[in-house]
Image 1 (cartoon, rainbow, N blue to C red):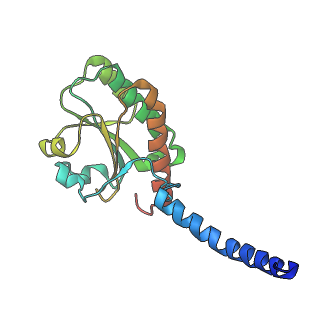
Image 2: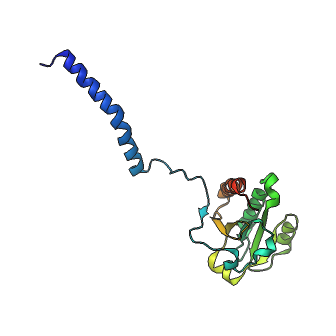
Image 3: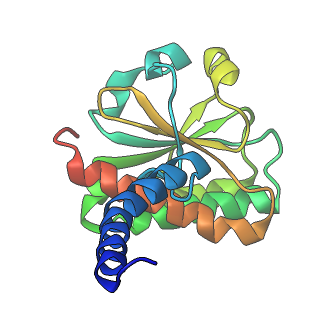
Length: 186
């Protein structure tokens, strides 16, 4: 039989080993099982390959070193499209003091109806006809964030249902505020 002193020293050894080994084992499991999100703080899709406004067939000089919210409208702008435009416009308005640094741009494949045209007049949207090169890179209902140097930074796909518009706007607003906060240009 083991003496009480020997049992006490074994217990102390096991507790000491457990204190040092358990955190390492838990950290390894957390990494392998992906128990956390690796510190990702952006909501949009970062641009994986480098392309700029000139690759889209859009002249950068016309925007005077502004951040751009570049939104491609679908061929037919139904109620969901109009609500998406309203959501993007509200996001743009919520930028507050950073508003002068950003320009919202709508890429159009067709002319707008009178009602849609009147909605644009109330806001500071710029309208451009969709260049053929841009049609290859930007899908319908997609929004791109472009930096003042003309590089496409992030993209967002508009939701297919109206319930997702609030989250869509919040995601763009969050990412834009971070970009504008840390950017020294534009």
